[in-house]
Image 1: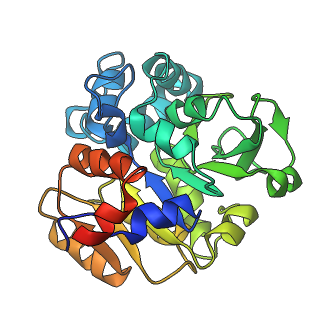
Image 2: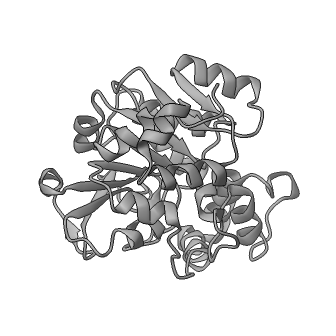
Length: 284
């Protein structure tokens, strides 16, 4: 555990060696957000629109499955489209990451904020997880910077690949959310089938930096573990709250160093490091 930013993080980001892995909490860095910034907030929004059994009202994947089973998949998608319909508002962190020569950014939430921050560039593209309930033969779909569909082979030409493993509101409203969505992925993820080939290539030998993420449940840990598989043996996660026993075990197992500071403080130091790398190196 560390309470400061190791100099290797901003240096690695600037060199494209460190891969940012963004969770929903990054959306709240600068105050209120136009879209849900936590699973707990999202499940409250969708269960306020559709009645689900009390025992699963706070369980996002189970509530999603109930709605899918009893109200149809289209109802679930419609609720998610409504929840994430707000205009994306990139934070300073999003803008900073968009300005760097990062070959890969992982964004594990449904908003389009990171894509909006990258929108001024034409040399990036997205790959998004898709639901097998809607696309039986597909695990992912590719999109160019302008939102038009792309072929997998085009990803090798993009300077930055934005990987949205759970899908995204834009450009095509893809969502992996219900229990059955996750069952489909988890039955194959150990052998890496749902992970795009280009992501596998780009992660090799690189470090991951987890921002706005937690690893409290098996889904969060499994996705992180499988996405970072066969990368390097050194990673970081900003976790200001005391980790649970399972989180602590996961961090040790995956060689993820915990940075014990509020996310906003970390990001403030990170943005300052863009012009003050030597100062951070002295602290480290």
